[in-house]
Length: 244
Image (tube, rainbow, N blue to C red; front, side):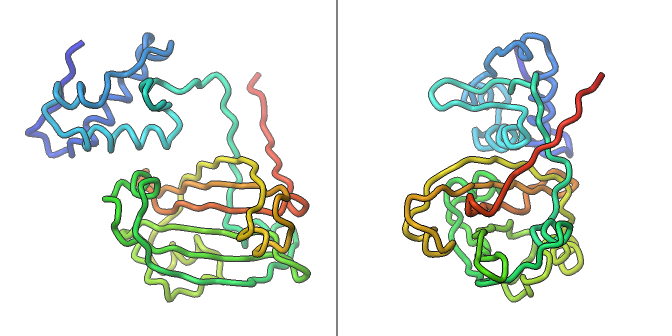
């Protein structure tokens, strides 16, 4: 199959590639699991850089439409089962809705170099400075969650904001950035010495790891968040409704 895009169009090349890939995923052969052309091959056919193809591919990976396996290839994600958590709020709003009074034990910010993972998510060069927000929060009796958030430079955060306030209210009211879409990954791990110290638990105890990828209404990534929860203080509930 021959692929093409319009190099004279005002539409950015990565956006055209994204549209091309979305169209491919609608075809029956790719729905059945056929692997997409590799990035090098597709870039050559389209006459663009591999990074441009990677930028479009990354967006669809983070949307859950593509699955990439190193050394194997990229194909359409299995859409037969789709579990979504629709009610997502900032942590402060989430706890307030449950009637839980939250205490901030630690809040700090620093500018760090984007590593490979955050750079890929934000679609920026590795090593670019991004704001990192660290927050240790919990009940009056003890902390039960440690958050690490990274923000895209385009948001405009300075690090001097009052992060004891609800995060998404700060983004919207002070920086005109609306958090529209959230995607999450939940996993389990054991606490190392650092996390055990933060959460007041023993090394080796269970910790819930919750990754959150947040996008604005235009689908642009704005926050990469990781939360580590004490397993004895947090229950994650998912409610799904069957279409009949």
